[in-house]
Picture 1 (tube, helix red, strand yellow):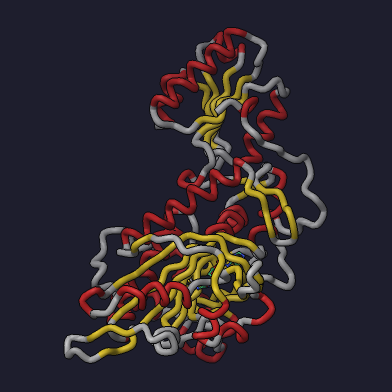
Picture 2: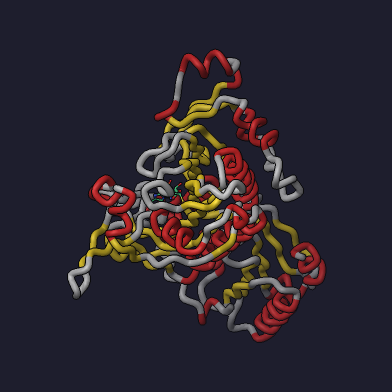
Length: 437
Ligand SMILES: Nc1ncnc2c1ncn2[C@@H]1O[C@H](COS(=O)(=O)NC(=O)[C@@H](N)CS)[C@@H](O)[C@H]1O
């Protein structure tokens, strides 16, 4: 992609109301534009990252056995009246009346709708276990949207819903999501710690939040620091028997503020291992049994032919929030440092003298070779001065910068820079390409 043909409205300064670094950098890097409080337009660079994060979430859901569908953003109020949540949900719910005076709402979550879909078709335990997920925009009329996409009003969520014949099976579904979440966040270069959490308006009695430690996090958290460095289980696990993996983590103390018990923390965790910090909630999983299947009559015939309510859980990931969380965890004074797996481009090719035919020819050759190898290249072919080009490349956080100028060309070398470390080497183009693949 030629930068001269792209749409990258970078800003020298962030607007003063952007308080945290991720909000400042997303605005300065031309990734988002606020259209209303808590409501954003996703500009090309931001959308590329959003889609990469979404794809990692999707792949790990599928690996854990979940099946993707897509539910609408608009829902009938009557569905929420069945579960009793229509009034209980409160002012965060955006209520809408259509031209026929029908009462609708912009979905903040989808437990009722997915239960309605399930009960319409599934009648036998033989269809279980089942986990259905989608990645869809939600609306929550937050009283104080802030910190950019971190706490928006319209935001992208992956929400999955599991259906099982009994509690024991439902806990296995819960464990599959628990492990899938550990793998998901690790693939994005994040250290996310599962912590016992409150269940709030979703309900149930078993819940974990996945927290990324960050000073600007809204949650106060307490945990055994061993949990932070524990590697993710990876894909090669027995998805039908994950209890030992889950126990390994839940055996160590980890709780959000609402669930924290200082006495228990001190009893269970040696002083040197106690971590109290602030964190960002990037995922939240719940087991809530028959909370929705009972009032909505979502039943299956069991092996004995008797109908029984299915046991459910729901599992959310803040897909759009993750851009903010990743930047909070990975940036420096120059700007964003994207982990390779979610970067908007793999490499920026920087032309130091766009009006020099030989340099431009060398750049275009490098771009062509890299694209032939499947690399996603941003080619800065603008007539911006070199300092400005380097500053833009650092700001938008692409993992590699390959710079070509007249002097390097004369010496038969290009300069390759690793954004994360700042390390630079001057090597022949072939070797630079070798290092990039
Ligand atoms: N206002 C918001 N802006 C951005 N992300 C949010 C917002 N509210 C929640 N999230 C993200 O969405 C995730 C899931 O939201 S939740 O309320 O915890 N859980 C649910 O809605 C359940 N239905 C899970 S399917 C949270 O962990 C958080 O990462």
